[in-house]
Length: 371
Image 1 (cartoon, one colour):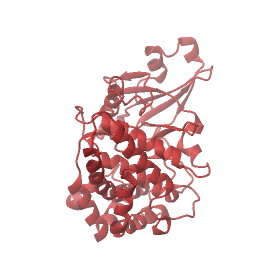
Image 2 (tube, rainbow, N blue to C red; image 1 turned 30 degrees about the horizontal axis):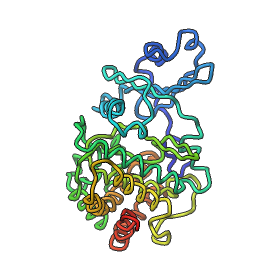
Image 3 (spheres, rainbow, N blue to C red; image 1 turned 120 degrees about the horizontal axis):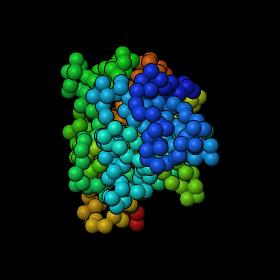
Image 4 (tube, helix red, strand yellow; image 1 turned 30 degrees about the vertical axis):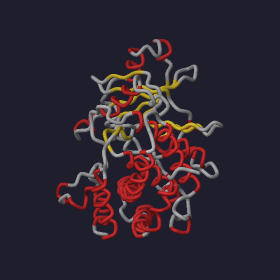
């Protein structure tokens, strides 16, 4: 859940959050709680686009019940991709460390139940910790992304991962569909596409894409359950945008969220740029851990080094694309295309696009085999 330098969290649309199944009935049907416990349970609406309910039992046990709302259904969205990812994790080796363990899956009614994470395991609390995200946590994120991608290569998937921002320069503007198509989001997208370096980078990223495995599609610290450890552990939730895609998109999303973290953090006065060297210790740790974990997967050989070298260019240009995506998302959340976070994100992303000749060797070096 992103604050976008406003210090405020998106409010739930409760008018749309009461259209699904009764969360207590879901928990009872799933055998997760009895009638007596549920009678005393406390329910809290934590919805964003979908209907999400936090259910806390008297003994302290807590569950998250997620289901599709009428609004998202009317927009043609579903939880199919997310439910499939959780179902896949029940039998696909390598995914158990990547996703939280689902407690109840109901594809027919589009319902998912997960154990609730503690407040200290979520982004809103973690962003207040000094040095977040540190190299150990970043390395853990790199490892789980590598496990996700290596274990799902050529696995049949229901959907294509969403990275449509890369196609914006070549889609007629009347056909753009950006989130809820808010005026602010559309204005931010127009600003990006009208910027020659950004438009060229988006086109190049689109031309490089090589879909080959399951990707999360929306990797960011907001969508992670974080155990600082030791040992550190990271798991990803919110798989609605997942599907078959290029692993570079997930890695780039992680880099973008980390590199632009200061812009997206409430109260921050730090701005990213070449003064930081672009690749912070945490970002280098993420890339190195991803590469080493990919090399350690069964069935890989010497060819993996060539694969990773090719991946580096795709990661860099998808990083630029994700920066544009975050700016558009930020504009929608703040309802202001001129919000400082939006303009800073676009300016930083433009700087990255112009610095590609200097940054690409850094990315390649970070994924190169250590000697």
